Amino acid sequence: MVGAIRAGLDGEGLEHVGVMSYAAKYASAFYGPFREAAESPPQFGDRSQYQMDPSNRREAMREVALDVDEGADF
Image 1 (cartoon, rainbow, N blue to C red):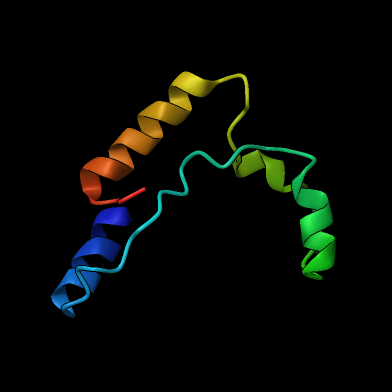
Image 2: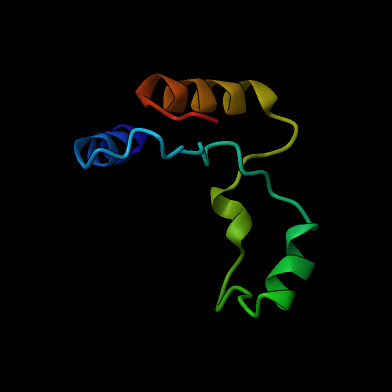
């Protein structure tokens, strides 16, 4: 997905726009207060299902490296 976003931006002359990898979003209780303040709590279920397990840092680093290879800037 990062590669497609980078290609689309570059194709429009927007090489200066950074792309951030979202691969290493960790499941955390710290997100709850932010979601409440932004009035965007989950409508149902638990969002931790698609978030990284904080104890599995090696997988997170692999996922981020893949995004960087596709053009993520940070």
